[in-house]
Length: 119
Image (cartoon, rainbow, N blue to C red; front, top):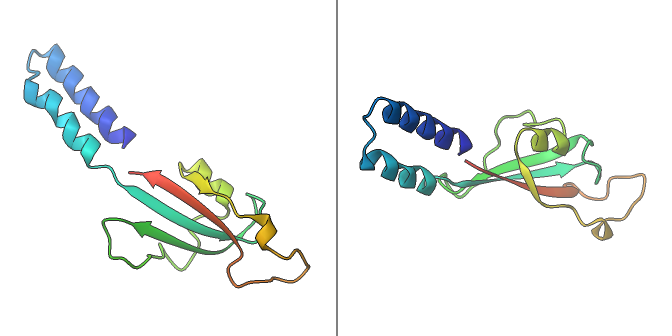
């Protein structure tokens, strides 16, 4: 999203300097702002630690079919922290009180982090 706005601003500055900027150019930002969408990334980590390896993941895109999409057979990131470094924002942390802390995995999908990115 930021990239599209930055590109639009650069274009408008060039047109302004050339004396070619129009009202339509300025109104085009509405199209850019209205075209954004939210992506949700569910990452299932091996613990509540942001650096822990992932055990599962799914991506939800409002413009795609209702089923989640696996980006590939390999995890999209090595950890939750790597996803955050790539621009994803955490909107939900796992709730540790829901998990029995033992040396054995207690569920197929354990520590669920939900992240979002506006694109």
